[in-house]
Length: 383
View 1 (tube, rainbow, N blue to C red):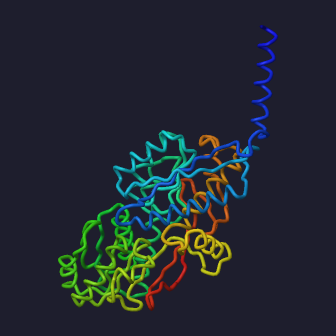
View 2: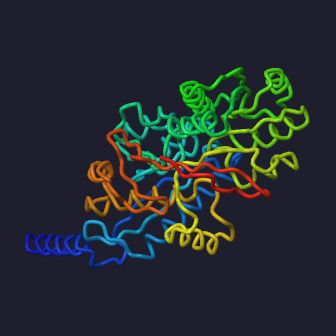
View 3: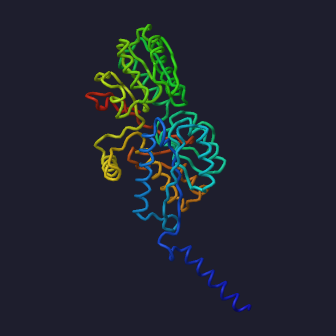
C-alpha cells in the first residue's frame, strides 16, 4: 500500500508540474475581464459600442496567443449591463467580484463608475474606466482606479477658455442635467470661463430624462446669451438645439464628449446650423493615424459599423490591462496592479498612455470639434 501511495503521489506531482509548465493544455490560464456599460436604456447605443470595443480587444489578444508568466492565456469577457444606474452598478460590481474577475473595464458613466469603485477597491480588483470623466472618480484614494482619457477638469476648462478667448462670448448661460457627469462638466466650464473673464448670466438645470426644455430655455432667452453650455448627452442636446431654434435663441451650443456624437445632427432634426455646436472629446487622435485607422477598419469589419462613442478607449483599456499582466508575469490582481500603476508610454490607438499617482492619464489630449453638413469637423487638438 505504501509503494502504491508513493507511485500515485509521484504521478500527481509530475502532472501538476507539466500543467504548470503549460505542456498539457494549449490554453492553460483563463483570464476573466469584466466590462460594464449601459447596453439598455437611453444611452444603450453607447454602451453596446463600448462592449464591442472590449470584444475586439479580447478576440485580438486570444488570436495573438498572449502568454502570462509562461502560460498561454485565454481571455474571457464577462459583459454586464448597469443601465447607467448607480444603484444597479453596485449590484453588478458585486456580481463580478463574486465571479472572481481579474480586472474590470468600466463603468461607462461617471456616476456608475464612482459608485462601483469602492467595491472593486475592497476586493483589490483593478478598474479602468474608458469614459468616466468626473474628477472624483480618481480622487477617493483607491489604488485600483484608473482612466485612459482626460477628465472633466481638462474638458470643461478647455471649453470654458475657448468660449471666452476664441468665440468671444460675452453672455453665457449654463445648463446641466444633474448627473455626476453633466454637473461636473458644467462646474469646470463655469470656473474656467469666469477665470478667462467670461460673464455667466444664468445657470439652469434639468434632469437626465427630460425632453421638454421650453421653460429653462425661455428663462435663458431673457438673458440674451451668445453661448449656451449644456452639461449632458446628445440625446437631450439635440432637442435643446431644436427648441432653441423654435424660441429664436441665436446662440452657439457648447458641450463635452457626451454631446459630441455622430448622431447629434439627427437628434437636432433640421435645427442645427453649420458651426453652431462646439464640443470637446477626450483624446486627440488624428484621423489619419495608422493605429486608429487600423482600429476603425477592424471594428467595422467585425461589427459592420464605425466605432462610436468610447469604443476606442475601451479597446485601449483592455489592452493596457493585459500589457500590465504580461509585464508582471501574473493575472493575479494583487500582483499585476503595481505594474498597471507603473504604466508609462504604452502606445494605444488613442495615443500614449501613462498613469499618474492618482490613476489619471498624464497630459491627456482634447479635441475641439464642430459640425458642418451634418458631419463632425476637427477645430483643434489641445492639451
